[in-house]
Image 1: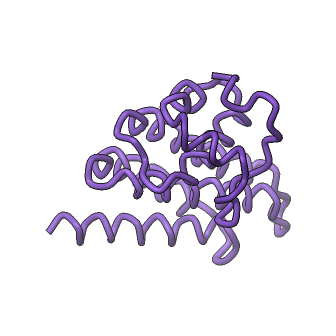
Image 2: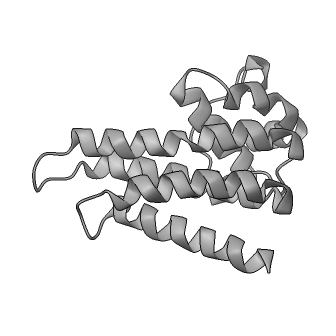
Length: 159
């Protein structure tokens, strides 16, 4: 498990990270991401979600662990709200939640139709939580919008 990252820096995975050695290591050993997605350490889970998003296809064996990891978006939304002051949102915490959602949703989308049911359940939870956000703009609002778009996309794919 930890051998996957041994001797490598663990910066966030981004669209431009395709040629980085740690991305190549992840692509060579995707099955090792399952235990990382189930970790109690939120930072490990975050890096594992970003790592799965860097793959071109998410292995079906990771869908359950990835779905569970997606529920952490709800926790991140709650954290962002808790850190905010009246009329002064915590922009960093909200951005953290939005970035996590985007990577998680990309990883679930890359799993194809096999992930649809679990993806839908998590997205519905996320959308419900994000709609409770007081701001009509910002990253928490964007989470609600992106969740709805992904759910609509799942609905149109089902027909």
